[in-house]
Amino acid sequence: MNGYRIHFGKDHTVVPNNKTYLRDTQFQSLTSIKFKDGRVASNLLKNLFGQKEIFTNPKDVGLLRDILKALNVTGSDIVLDFFAGSGSTAHAVLNMNLEDNNNRRYICIQLPEPTTKTTEAYKAGYSNIFDITKDRLLKASHKIRTENPTYQGDLGFKIFETVEDFRVKDEGELTLENLSFFDDVVLTDEQYNTLLTTWCVYDGSLLTTPIQDVDLNGYTAHMCDKRLYLIAPNFNSETIKALLHELDNNKDFEPNKVVFYGNNFDSAKQMELNEALKGYANKKSLEIDLVVRN
Image 1: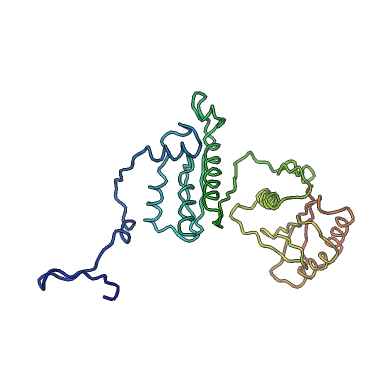
Image 2: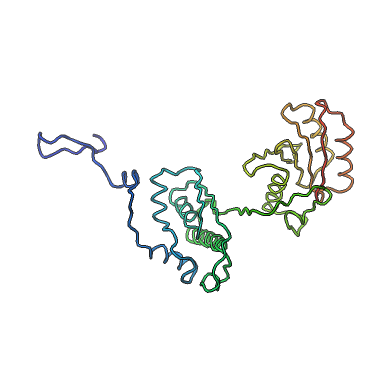
Protein backbone atom coordinates (compact mmCIF):
# COMPACT_ATOMS: atom_id res chain seq x y z
CA MET A 1 0.00 0.00 0.00
CA ASN A 2 2.70 2.47 0.97
CA GLY A 3 4.41 1.93 -2.37
CA TYR A 4 1.20 2.52 -4.33
CA ARG A 5 1.55 -0.94 -5.91
CA ILE A 6 -2.13 -1.93 -5.48
CA HIS A 7 -4.61 -1.25 -8.27
CA PHE A 8 -8.26 -0.70 -7.26
CA GLY A 9 -11.09 -0.98 -9.72
CA LYS A 10 -13.91 1.45 -10.32
CA ASP A 11 -16.10 -0.09 -7.60
CA HIS A 12 -16.41 -2.94 -5.08
CA THR A 13 -17.10 -5.50 -7.82
CA VAL A 14 -13.49 -5.35 -9.06
CA VAL A 15 -10.93 -7.37 -7.11
CA PRO A 16 -7.83 -5.28 -6.21
CA ASN A 17 -4.58 -6.56 -7.71
CA ASN A 18 -0.88 -5.74 -7.83
CA LYS A 19 0.32 -3.14 -10.28
CA THR A 20 2.77 -4.54 -12.82
CA TYR A 21 5.37 -2.34 -14.50
CA LEU A 22 7.19 -3.19 -17.69
CA ARG A 23 10.55 -2.36 -16.11
CA ASP A 24 9.98 -5.13 -13.56
CA THR A 25 8.84 -7.84 -15.96
CA GLN A 26 10.46 -7.31 -19.36
CA PHE A 27 13.35 -9.65 -18.51
CA GLN A 28 11.44 -12.22 -16.45
CA SER A 29 10.55 -14.61 -19.25
CA LEU A 30 11.98 -15.40 -22.65
CA THR A 31 9.75 -15.75 -25.68
CA SER A 32 10.58 -18.32 -28.32
CA ILE A 33 10.64 -15.66 -31.04
CA LYS A 34 12.10 -12.17 -30.91
CA PHE A 35 12.15 -9.81 -33.85
CA LYS A 36 15.24 -7.64 -34.29
CA ASP A 37 16.37 -5.61 -37.27
CA GLY A 38 19.63 -7.27 -38.33
CA ARG A 39 20.93 -3.97 -39.65
CA VAL A 40 21.36 -2.68 -36.09
CA ALA A 41 24.09 -5.22 -35.27
CA SER A 42 25.72 -4.77 -38.68
CA ASN A 43 25.76 -0.98 -38.34
CA LEU A 44 27.25 -1.19 -34.84
CA LEU A 45 30.09 -3.29 -36.21
CA LYS A 46 30.49 -0.99 -39.19
CA ASN A 47 30.80 2.06 -36.93
CA LEU A 48 33.22 0.26 -34.62
CA PHE A 49 35.56 -0.84 -37.42
CA GLY A 50 34.98 2.14 -39.67
CA GLN A 51 34.15 0.01 -42.70
CA LYS A 52 31.51 -2.35 -44.08
CA GLU A 53 31.20 -6.12 -44.12
CA ILE A 54 33.99 -7.03 -41.71
CA PHE A 55 31.72 -9.78 -40.41
CA THR A 56 28.48 -11.07 -41.92
CA ASN A 57 25.37 -11.35 -39.73
CA PRO A 58 26.88 -10.53 -36.32
CA LYS A 59 24.77 -11.28 -33.24
CA ASP A 60 22.82 -8.36 -31.83
CA VAL A 61 24.45 -6.93 -28.67
CA GLY A 62 21.13 -5.57 -27.38
CA LEU A 63 19.40 -8.92 -27.81
CA LEU A 64 22.23 -10.71 -26.04
CA ARG A 65 21.99 -8.18 -23.21
CA ASP A 66 18.25 -8.89 -22.86
CA ILE A 67 18.89 -12.64 -22.76
CA LEU A 68 21.61 -12.31 -20.13
CA LYS A 69 19.36 -10.06 -18.03
CA ALA A 70 16.51 -12.56 -18.30
CA LEU A 71 18.89 -15.26 -17.07
CA ASN A 72 19.87 -12.99 -14.16
CA VAL A 73 23.54 -12.97 -15.10
CA THR A 74 25.01 -10.57 -12.57
CA GLY A 75 27.80 -9.95 -10.07
CA SER A 76 30.93 -11.80 -11.14
CA ASP A 77 29.11 -14.49 -13.15
CA ILE A 78 30.95 -15.99 -16.12
CA VAL A 79 29.37 -16.08 -19.58
CA LEU A 80 30.68 -18.82 -21.88
CA ASP A 81 30.33 -18.50 -25.66
CA PHE A 82 31.61 -21.47 -27.65
CA PHE A 83 31.05 -19.70 -30.98
CA ALA A 84 32.46 -16.23 -30.39
CA GLY A 85 32.29 -15.05 -34.00
CA SER A 86 32.77 -11.29 -34.05
CA GLY A 87 32.72 -11.10 -30.24
CA SER A 88 29.16 -9.82 -29.74
CA THR A 89 28.63 -11.77 -26.50
CA ALA A 90 31.75 -10.35 -24.89
CA HIS A 91 30.74 -6.88 -26.11
CA ALA A 92 27.34 -7.30 -24.46
CA VAL A 93 29.00 -8.29 -21.18
CA LEU A 94 31.23 -5.21 -21.29
CA ASN A 95 28.21 -2.97 -21.87
CA MET A 96 26.26 -4.57 -19.02
CA ASN A 97 29.15 -4.07 -16.61
CA LEU A 98 29.30 -0.43 -17.64
CA GLU A 99 25.56 -0.01 -16.99
CA ASP A 100 25.46 -1.40 -13.44
CA ASN A 101 29.15 -1.47 -12.42
CA ASN A 102 29.16 -5.24 -11.96
CA ASN A 103 32.09 -7.49 -12.80
CA ARG A 104 30.67 -10.16 -15.09
CA ARG A 105 33.33 -12.10 -16.95
CA TYR A 106 33.33 -13.92 -20.26
CA ILE A 107 35.08 -16.83 -21.91
CA CYS A 108 34.84 -16.74 -25.70
CA ILE A 109 36.07 -19.58 -27.88
CA GLN A 110 36.74 -19.13 -31.57
CA LEU A 111 38.58 -21.35 -34.01
CA PRO A 112 41.09 -19.54 -36.25
CA GLU A 113 38.82 -20.09 -39.25
CA PRO A 114 40.44 -18.48 -42.31
CA THR A 115 38.69 -15.58 -43.96
CA THR A 116 38.09 -15.77 -47.70
CA LYS A 117 40.53 -13.72 -49.77
CA THR A 118 37.71 -11.91 -51.56
CA THR A 119 36.12 -10.60 -48.35
CA GLU A 120 36.49 -7.12 -46.89
CA ALA A 121 37.81 -8.69 -43.69
CA TYR A 122 40.71 -10.35 -45.49
CA LYS A 123 41.47 -7.18 -47.44
CA ALA A 124 41.54 -5.26 -44.13
CA GLY A 125 44.20 -7.61 -42.76
CA TYR A 126 42.07 -10.09 -40.82
CA SER A 127 43.34 -13.48 -41.96
CA ASN A 128 41.02 -15.45 -39.67
CA ILE A 129 37.85 -14.98 -37.64
CA PHE A 130 39.70 -14.84 -34.32
CA ASP A 131 41.59 -11.75 -35.50
CA ILE A 132 38.21 -10.05 -35.90
CA THR A 133 37.05 -11.23 -32.46
CA LYS A 134 40.16 -9.87 -30.78
CA ASP A 135 40.13 -6.52 -32.58
CA ARG A 136 36.42 -6.03 -31.91
CA LEU A 137 37.02 -6.43 -28.15
CA LEU A 138 39.95 -4.01 -28.28
CA LYS A 139 37.90 -1.43 -30.17
CA ALA A 140 34.84 -1.87 -27.94
CA SER A 141 36.96 -1.51 -24.80
CA HIS A 142 38.66 1.60 -26.18
CA LYS A 143 35.28 3.13 -27.04
CA ILE A 144 33.92 2.48 -23.55
CA ARG A 145 37.03 3.91 -21.90
CA THR A 146 37.04 6.99 -24.16
CA GLU A 147 33.36 7.77 -23.64
CA ASN A 148 33.45 6.99 -19.90
CA PRO A 149 36.82 8.26 -18.61
CA THR A 150 35.87 7.80 -14.94
CA TYR A 151 34.82 4.17 -15.39
CA GLN A 152 37.08 1.86 -13.36
CA GLY A 153 35.77 -1.50 -14.60
CA ASP A 154 38.04 -4.17 -16.02
CA LEU A 155 38.06 -4.02 -19.82
CA GLY A 156 41.05 -6.28 -20.38
CA PHE A 157 41.18 -9.89 -21.53
CA LYS A 158 43.68 -12.71 -21.85
CA ILE A 159 44.26 -14.87 -24.91
CA PHE A 160 44.89 -18.60 -24.58
CA GLU A 161 45.76 -20.58 -27.69
CA THR A 162 45.90 -24.32 -28.24
CA VAL A 163 49.31 -25.44 -29.51
CA GLU A 164 51.15 -28.65 -30.16
CA ASP A 165 52.51 -30.29 -27.00
CA PHE A 166 55.52 -28.10 -26.25
CA ARG A 167 56.78 -30.07 -23.27
CA VAL A 168 60.30 -31.42 -23.56
CA LYS A 169 61.59 -34.57 -21.94
CA ASP A 170 64.86 -33.03 -20.84
CA GLU A 171 64.59 -30.00 -18.54
CA GLY A 172 67.96 -28.95 -19.93
CA GLU A 173 66.26 -28.19 -23.24
CA LEU A 174 63.81 -25.83 -21.56
CA THR A 175 64.55 -22.16 -22.14
CA LEU A 176 62.45 -19.05 -21.92
CA GLU A 177 62.51 -18.82 -25.71
CA ASN A 178 60.71 -22.17 -25.92
CA LEU A 179 57.86 -20.97 -23.77
CA SER A 180 57.22 -17.27 -23.59
CA PHE A 181 59.12 -15.35 -26.27
CA PHE A 182 60.13 -12.58 -23.86
CA ASP A 183 62.97 -10.38 -25.05
CA ASP A 184 63.43 -8.47 -21.80
CA VAL A 185 65.14 -9.80 -18.70
CA VAL A 186 62.93 -7.57 -16.53
CA LEU A 187 59.42 -8.93 -16.85
CA THR A 188 56.36 -6.70 -16.94
CA ASP A 189 53.45 -7.74 -14.72
CA GLU A 190 51.71 -9.21 -17.75
CA GLN A 191 54.80 -11.17 -18.81
CA TYR A 192 55.31 -12.35 -15.23
CA ASN A 193 51.77 -13.73 -14.99
CA THR A 194 52.01 -15.26 -18.47
CA LEU A 195 55.26 -17.00 -17.57
CA LEU A 196 53.82 -18.34 -14.32
CA THR A 197 50.68 -19.64 -16.04
CA THR A 198 52.72 -21.19 -18.86
CA TRP A 199 55.02 -23.01 -16.47
CA CYS A 200 52.10 -24.35 -14.43
CA VAL A 201 50.45 -25.71 -17.58
CA TYR A 202 53.81 -27.02 -18.83
CA ASP A 203 54.21 -28.96 -15.59
CA GLY A 204 50.81 -30.63 -15.97
CA SER A 205 48.37 -28.33 -14.18
CA LEU A 206 45.07 -27.19 -15.65
CA LEU A 207 44.32 -23.55 -16.37
CA THR A 208 41.75 -23.75 -13.58
CA THR A 209 44.20 -25.09 -10.98
CA PRO A 210 44.55 -22.56 -8.14
CA ILE A 211 47.92 -20.82 -7.77
CA GLN A 212 48.66 -19.86 -4.17
CA ASP A 213 50.99 -17.02 -3.24
CA VAL A 214 53.55 -17.92 -0.57
CA ASP A 215 55.19 -15.18 1.50
CA LEU A 216 58.85 -15.96 2.21
CA ASN A 217 59.90 -13.05 4.40
CA GLY A 218 58.63 -10.47 1.92
CA TYR A 219 59.48 -12.46 -1.21
CA THR A 220 56.43 -13.77 -3.09
CA ALA A 221 56.68 -17.33 -4.38
CA HIS A 222 53.85 -19.34 -5.94
CA MET A 223 52.61 -22.84 -5.16
CA CYS A 224 50.69 -24.93 -7.71
CA ASP A 225 50.13 -28.68 -7.37
CA LYS A 226 53.02 -29.08 -4.90
CA ARG A 227 55.42 -27.17 -7.14
CA LEU A 228 56.98 -23.96 -5.85
CA TYR A 229 57.76 -21.29 -8.45
CA LEU A 230 60.36 -18.60 -7.77
CA ILE A 231 60.18 -15.99 -10.52
CA ALA A 232 60.49 -12.59 -8.85
CA PRO A 233 63.88 -10.88 -8.41
CA ASN A 234 65.46 -9.94 -5.05
CA PHE A 235 65.70 -13.52 -3.82
CA ASN A 236 68.26 -13.53 -0.99
CA SER A 237 69.60 -15.49 1.99
CA GLU A 238 66.72 -14.39 4.20
CA THR A 239 64.32 -15.81 1.62
CA ILE A 240 66.09 -19.16 1.82
CA LYS A 241 65.81 -19.14 5.62
CA ALA A 242 62.09 -18.42 5.33
CA LEU A 243 61.73 -21.25 2.80
CA LEU A 244 63.43 -23.74 5.12
CA HIS A 245 61.29 -22.51 8.02
CA GLU A 246 58.12 -23.16 6.01
CA LEU A 247 59.35 -26.64 5.10
CA ASP A 248 59.85 -27.49 8.77
CA ASN A 249 56.94 -25.73 10.42
CA ASN A 250 54.06 -25.40 7.97
CA LYS A 251 52.23 -28.73 7.76
CA ASP A 252 50.45 -27.66 4.56
CA PHE A 253 53.66 -26.64 2.79
CA GLU A 254 55.00 -29.75 1.04
CA PRO A 255 56.50 -28.94 -2.37
CA ASN A 256 58.15 -31.75 -4.30
CA LYS A 257 59.71 -29.45 -6.89
CA VAL A 258 61.15 -25.93 -6.83
CA VAL A 259 61.33 -24.16 -10.18
CA PHE A 260 63.13 -20.83 -10.41
CA TYR A 261 63.64 -18.26 -13.15
CA GLY A 262 67.39 -18.24 -13.71
CA ASN A 263 67.49 -14.73 -15.18
CA ASN A 264 66.53 -13.33 -11.77
CA PHE A 265 69.03 -15.46 -9.81
CA ASP A 266 72.76 -14.86 -9.98
CA SER A 267 75.05 -17.90 -9.87
CA ALA A 268 75.81 -17.43 -6.16
CA LYS A 269 72.12 -17.46 -5.22
CA GLN A 270 71.48 -20.46 -7.47
CA MET A 271 74.25 -22.38 -5.73
CA GLU A 272 73.09 -21.26 -2.28
CA LEU A 273 69.54 -22.40 -3.00
CA ASN A 274 70.75 -25.72 -4.39
CA GLU A 275 72.94 -26.39 -1.34
CA ALA A 276 70.16 -25.40 1.05
CA LEU A 277 67.62 -27.77 -0.48
CA LYS A 278 69.99 -30.66 -1.13
CA GLY A 279 72.02 -30.39 2.07
CA TYR A 280 69.27 -29.61 4.55
CA ALA A 281 67.41 -32.53 6.15
CA ASN A 282 63.94 -31.03 6.51
CA LYS A 283 61.74 -32.41 9.27
CA LYS A 284 59.23 -33.84 6.79
CA SER A 285 61.91 -35.81 4.92
CA LEU A 286 60.70 -34.29 1.65
CA GLU A 287 62.69 -35.01 -1.48
CA ILE A 288 62.62 -31.81 -3.50
CA ASP A 289 63.76 -31.47 -7.11
CA LEU A 290 65.33 -28.16 -8.09
CA VAL A 291 64.88 -26.92 -11.66
CA VAL A 292 66.25 -23.76 -13.23
CA ARG A 293 64.63 -22.32 -16.35
CA ASN A 294 66.24 -19.40 -18.13
